[in-house]
Length: 118
Image (cartoon, rainbow, N blue to C red; front, side):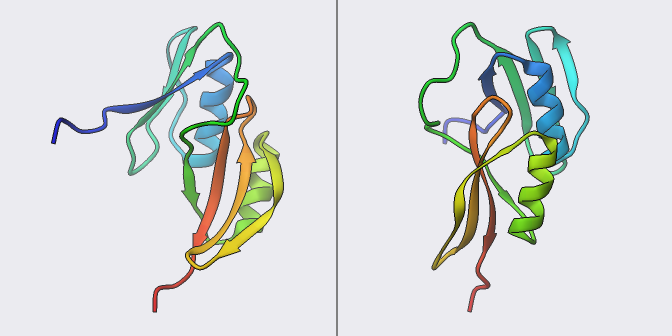
């Protein structure tokens, strides 16, 4: 082992906007180190930070968050009310069900509900 995760950092254009959005999704209070660096401490998880970068997002994420929920449709509607965008239909497979979403800056993420284990 080399180490442990200190924080997850998202490059973005508007750190304050994303900190508020993700606080609405995961909990925690948005905080700012300065105009270019905002963060939250979601309960039970590591720090999630947002840093301003000059370039915009142009391709699909190589890394995304899966957010565990009790009800896919309810969680999707709540996320949309916070500013998320639904991408395509709900997907179901052997491990469970998920809905792909985008945050207000177009970063993909999913709400997921695993199938019960037998």
